[in-house]
Image (tube, rainbow, N blue to C red; front, side, top):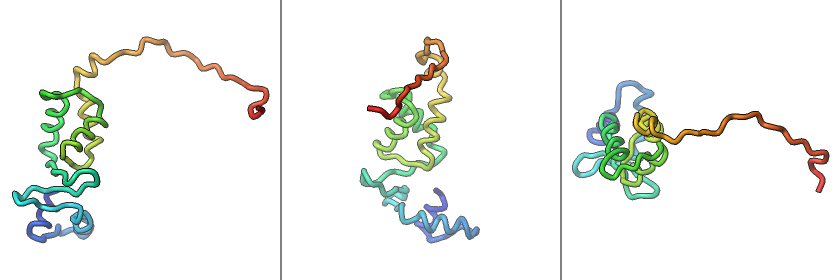
Amino acid sequence: MDSIVLFLKENILPKEKSEANKVRRKAPQFWLSEDQKLDKHSFSSPYLLCIHPKVVELLLEELYEGICGSHTGGRSLSHRALTQGHWWSNMQREAQEYVKKYDQCQRFASNIHQLGGALNPLSSPWPFAQ
C-alpha cells in the first residue's frame, strides 16, 4: 500500500524489478484523494477507502463488537466493511481469522446435541428406470 501511494504521489517505483512491475500493474486501480488518502475504484460503490494494515484490527473490532456490532461470521463481516466503504487486501481472510479468535462467540455458540451415526446406503434395483 505504501509503495502504491509513493508511486501515485511522486512517481517513484521500488528498486526490485518484480515489485516495481506489481506496483505499476496495480496502480491504475487506485487514486489519491485531495487529502492524500488512497482510494480504490469499485464496481458497486463509487470509491472504497483503503485501510492501512495497522488499522485493520481496530476497524474489525468496531464492526464486530462496537456499538452497532452484530457478532456475525467472517464473510458477512468483510461484506459489511465493503458496504461501509472500506477496503484492504485479504479482507475476507482477515475477517474470518478475527471471528475465529473472538473468545465469547466461540464459548457461547450453540452446540450440536445430535449424536453422530453411520450412514446407511440405499440401493435401488433400477437406478435409471422411470
